[in-house]
Image (cartoon, rainbow, N blue to C red; front, side, top):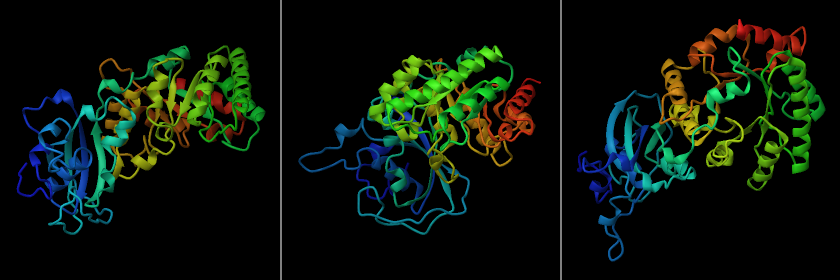
Length: 416
C-alpha cells in the first residue's frame, strides 16, 4: 500500500499489514465495496472506523501502544463493476478523506481486512459490532457487502447435533426430511393446529414446527401450547409406528428465555427454533453448549442483511456464522435451487454448511417457499445430497385427497 494518498490518516503504518504480524492473532474478512474515493483511502478509512481511528492526542495518546489494536489492510483487488449504489456524503472526521472525493464509481473493490482477535474477545455480540458495526454508515462507501469472514473456534461450540444427529433422531430415514410449518401462523386455535400437525405426521411427514410468528403472552399459555402439540406428536408416533419430531418456537424476550427453554426440555419438545438476528447471535452458543435438543436458526429479519447483492452480508457468511455458533439448521435464501440463484452462490453456501471445519458438525439446510415433489431433482442438485429439510404447507394443505394423503404422496416421492 502506498502512503501518498491515505486521506486524513496520520499514521498509515498502523493500518497496513506487515509480514512481522502473526496471522494467528487476526481474523480475516473480505468486503466488496464501491466508493467515491480511492480504494486505498476507503480501505484505511474502514480499518480506522472499526478500531483506533484516533491514534495521537498530545499528552495523552501515543501511536505505539495501539499497534496491537488496529485493523490492518491486507489486500485490495478489483472486483466486478456495478450498475449503481447509494448516494455518498462526507463528515469532518479522521476517517473521511477531506480531498479527492469524486462522483459515484461503477468500480468495485475486494478489500481484505485483518481484525485483531482481541477486539472481539470471543463474544458473539462483537461479530456484528466489529465486523460490520458502522462500516455501512461511512459516507464515502456507495456499495458494501461482507463476502467472507471465518470466525475463530472460540466463538461457539458448533452444532450439538448437526445433520447426522437430526437424522438419527428420526431413525435415519431415506431422502430429505419433510416438515410442515403451522399454517395459518396466527389466529388459529391451538387444538385445530394440533389436529393439522397430527394429520400430516400420520400421513408421513417427519416433523412439524411452530410458525415464527407464534407469540405467547405468558409462560402458562406457552406451556399449554407445548402440551397440546406434544400430545398430537405422540399420537402420530403411535399410529404411524415412526419417530416424529416437534419443533417449538422459542422466540421470546430475554427474561422469558430461561424458563421457556427449561419448560420445552422438561415437557419433551424435540427441537426449538430461535431468531438469532433478532434475539442476538450469542443465544446460539448459550443453548448449543447444553446440547439438549437441535436448534433451528430461523431467517426472520436476516434477509434484510443478505438479499441485496450490492449491500449487506453474503448468505454464505451468515450460514458459516450460524454453524460456528451452534445452530443445527439454517434456512436457505428464497431463490435457492432455482435458476434465479447463481451457481457460485449455491456452491459457496453449501461449502459454508458442510466443509470440514475443525471437527465442527455440518449444519442442515432448510428449503422453503412453495416446495413440491416436482422440484425434488432440483433441490437435491442444489444441496448435493439428501441431507436437507423441506418446509411444505401449501402443497399438502391443498391436496385434493386431503392433508394426510398429500403428506403420504410427498413422502413416497422423497423415498422413491
